[in-house]
Length: 183
Image (cartoon, rainbow, N blue to C red; front, side):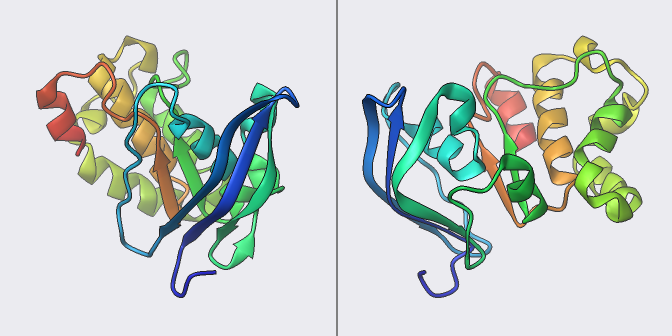
């Protein structure tokens, strides 16, 4: 593993349906406190790489066939997604995936599920960063605007006190002003 890396993706190969090779020889190192952006055309494999990191490939009939994914010095290549979350990994998936029928506060509680001891302090910290959510705490999340839903998805992920936050297309479909607010 690269010295001081929070995340290391080493020569990863991903295959879907045991046939379609989507990624080959991909390596990325993310050091503590750093931001890394994956850029590329549609279909280049950005989301597939994030699925390899978060363990969500099997849901999409994919698997890592070569290489490794290491988080904080520990190989997580074949860990279940829940174990990766407990190890400090949180993901905000593309498309504002929130629990639309729950309130803002209930969504945030769901995000703290793996770290219940930190719920109160994390809740305050998240509300300080996303004050619009504070005003809508008891509102059903499905009625929030698109930008507010994206803020909620990010805030929910932060409730677990992640070591590493993975965002897939965090600004997709949002107005530039909303993107600035989220940033």
